[in-house]
Length: 366
Image 1 (cartoon, one colour):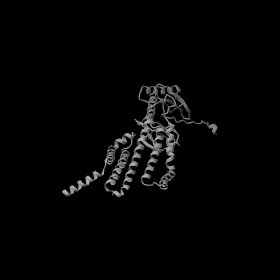
Image 2 (image 1 turned 135 degrees about the horizontal axis):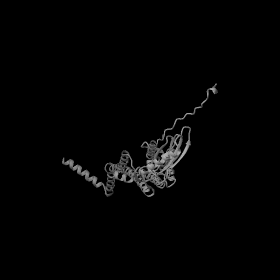
Image 3 (image 1 turned 180 degrees about the vertical axis):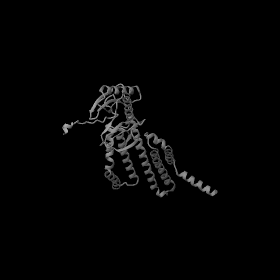
Image 4 (image 1 turned 120 degrees about the vertical axis):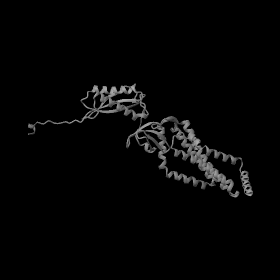
C-alpha cells in the first residue's frame, strides 16, 4: 500500500513539474469557460430560443474547451518527448478553431449592439439585426474564417505553396459548387434588411398561396422566421423565397393616423341608407367608449357603398388602428359590436335571397 501511494505521489509530482505557468493558465481559463458557458452564451445571445437549441450551443462551447484540455493533457502527459510536435499541433488547431468561434460570436454581438435596433418582438425588447450589423458580422466572419483556415494550414505543416494552395483550393471549389444552396439566401437576407420592409417585430401580410398574417420574428442568415398570429405557430421561409412574395407591411403606416382598416357588410335594399349609417355610427361610438378596442377614436368612421349587387347592397366602413399586433382581435370585436347593434335596431346582416319572376298572362302563353 505504501509503495502504491509512493508511486502515485511520484507520478503526481512528475506531472506537476512538467506543467508551467502558461500551462496552468490555459487549463484554468478553459475550465472557467466550461463552467460559465451558459452565462456567456446567454449574454451574447439575447434571443429567445428553445431549451434544446440553447443546450446545443452550450454543449458545443464546452466540447471545444474539453477538446483543448484533452489535447493539452495528451501532449504533456502521454505523448513521448520525441513525438510532441504532433501533440502541440493538435492543441494549437483546437485552440485556433475555438478562438475563431468565440471571436466571431463576440463580434456579431458587438455589431448588433452598435448598429442594430432595439425593438419589441413578441412582447420582449431586444437588439435586432440591421443591414449594417449583418454586413459587419458577415465580413468579420469571413475574415476570421480566412485567418483560422490559414492558421490551421500552417500549423498542420502545409507550408509549401502547392500544399497550402491545394487545401485552400479544395475548400474554394466546395464553396463554389454549393453556392446555389446558400448564396441566394444570404444576399436576399441582406436585401431584406437593407430595404427595411420586413424588420423584426413588424406585422406583415403575405397573400401568395394561403394568405396569412404574421409577425417577423427573426431574419437569419439563410431564412426568416414568422409568427403566424392566427394559428400561433412559426413559419420558416427561405430569404430568397420571401423576396419573391408580395409583402404587405402593416406596421409601416402611410400616415400618422395609423392603419386604415375596412369591414364589409351586405344589407338588403329595403333598409334605408340613413338607418344603416346610424347603426354603424352607434356601434363606432360604443367602440370609442371602450378604451381597449384598438380603434383610434379621434378619427371619424368612413361609411360608404362598395357594390350594388343583385341581392343586397355591400356597405364598407373604414376605421384607423395602430394596434396592428392585435388586428384580428380588433376585427372580431368590431364585427360583433356591429352585429349586436344591428339586432337591436332590427337590421338583418344576412344576405337576402331574391327572386326575379316574369309574370306572363295566360293569353300571352296561348
